[in-house]
Length: 247
Image (cartoon, rainbow, N blue to C red; front, side):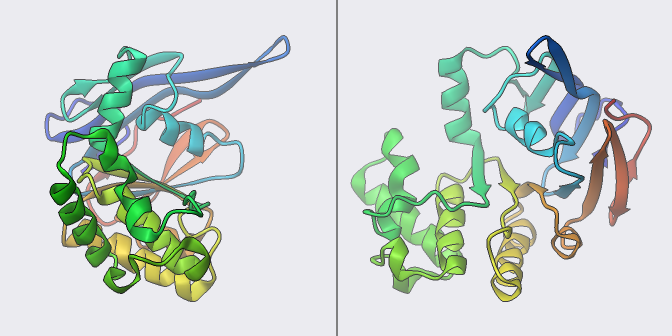
């Protein structure tokens, strides 16, 4: 279930309450998000659309603990992250969030296996356990035969699949995708979206995605639009309630 009316729902994996984000530019205050409410249930696939500057990426950064709100709260699976210390937030992010960006951010001198293994180097897993996790993640994205390939030896679509493998290797609570197909042609974009759908439908991952592509957004369960400070329902395939938003 996805709701943006501020009504508490104990079944929600992600709960956002009265979220504000303000930036200062010179002597001017820019209100990017104001009074945003959102509930997202486990296993939901939500797409956010809207013009540039509407706050989509800001919202994703706040949900992922990469930024802190000016006001309001974010609770994920019972953890209220808004007032966590920087160290605790780093640890929480490593355990719970998988990031997929438009740019693949792969390290050129590392092969696919090594790139996917990177998040696990911060854990207490043994070398054998890390190998098992990495091999499983690369198998899920269909790149078991490319694990020794370097980024320069892969197509754009394959590079994004390595990025997805890296995002899921630690089995995060949810995935945040910022324009995951923005640098791909239509065929590669369709393949990546089919993989993200599989993560939702087969592996029950919760996915929140920003996109400018209406065809990509159609793959989500629910599409929400951020425009001029207002959160508006675009489409639903499950129960979605609108009675609030951002200003």
